[in-house]
Image (cartoon, rainbow, N blue to C red; front, side, top):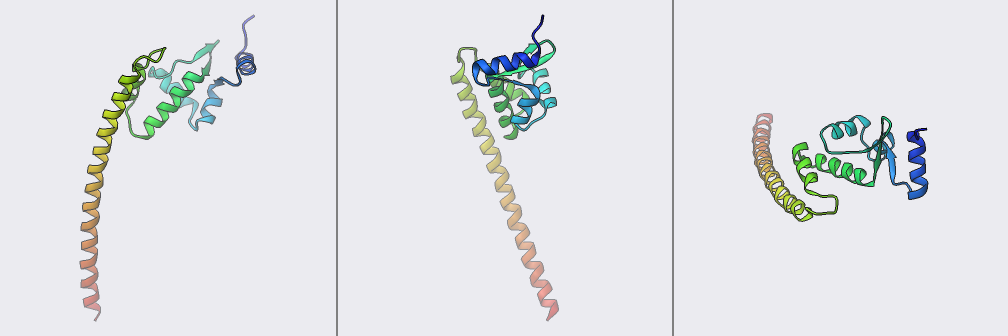
Length: 143
């Protein structure tokens, strides 16, 4: 008789202090949706175990999902995230390449943000000038 997903999760929790999650649990815990998790799986970013048709996520997949969500919040594309994740092997090989990629990409992102900040500062200065001049003109008319 096949083991049910619920009994699989329960058995692994009891034996390994909570090292597996169902998709709904994982979504709630990491403040995302089951749909998003399935999407990341369809893009090859996650590879959960299956018990029948039910997805079961271990610590590795949970850590990968946390990394995906953080990388997305920082503006990385799914292609960049996949390339980063694919560098890391089963036994940790590729970690140096991952770190090199992080150093390079974060440097690029910092430069992009600094350029945007410079543009914003320039626009703010121009708007402040226009406001001051407009206020002066308005004040002169009220006298």
